[in-house]
Length: 382
Image 1 (cartoon, one colour):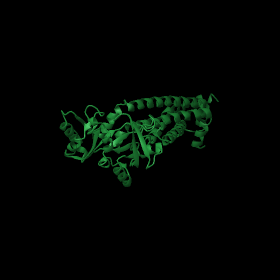
Image 2: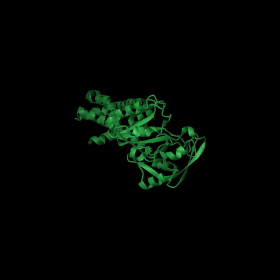
Image 3: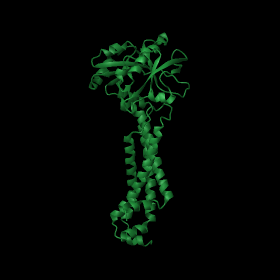
Image 4: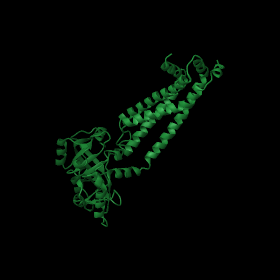
């Protein structure tokens, strides 16, 4: 008698129960996949942050400006390789729900500081020559069906009163890594500056700089902040990783929340599967006694019950993770709130391992009970 054939024969004995148990694993692993995606979306800034990049913001808050004159002074600090500056724009396209990040960028230095964002040279040159030009990430372009040459109106009420800004789409960028953010919309800082009220001119939102040696990041950060200490615009400089982590913390302890939800789900799944296997063993007590009477060892019976539990976990877990992967391939369902919506292979492997562990653990007690079952006691039920 084949071991595999015996396992599947027992599993399909109660088809409805088998299907429901598989469904429990599938739902749990589907939820696990989505939680992994959300965790990745909130932590992607930390994961992809450049080890050689620093971010300088106003010490009070990122929404407070920093003078443009700081740029040359920062660049003169030993160890600083290049620097660029950005401004948050905060406009919307057609509808308030159409959110995506928009930045007025320093055209001359953007690509030196962010080499992971690739733009074809011809498109970039067209952008540089076009005062109202714009570059958009491929994900946002796909979302709205934009193509190069389109005229893009962006409504904004934060600067210079309520108005609509017109941009020419000169190019698209893509990330060199799967986790790179391709939802951004860039336009020229000079165009942004010329439309600002006089009281806002000459200021930038924040600086991002690259250093020659990441080991000098702490020294350079202190040098920048000390240079502008006791000035009307004091600064706070930190590594891009620390900056991204601090940004995520504003949303609360996302990782703890996800771990708590995941822990509760899998603990419940453990109880459900364990109870299902215990019922299945009790229903087959006489059959297990017959197997032992025929000469099959206690170890065989133990592995038989454990095998059934692990097979259920493997099928249900694979189904759930597969559905989660298919769901993420449809793109971000939040309308841009989660620019990174991707289930990596590492998360899939982790989910599969967790499913198999839950399957094995849930089958341990029923399997041990079956292994220690006495033939005489089992055959009394025949």
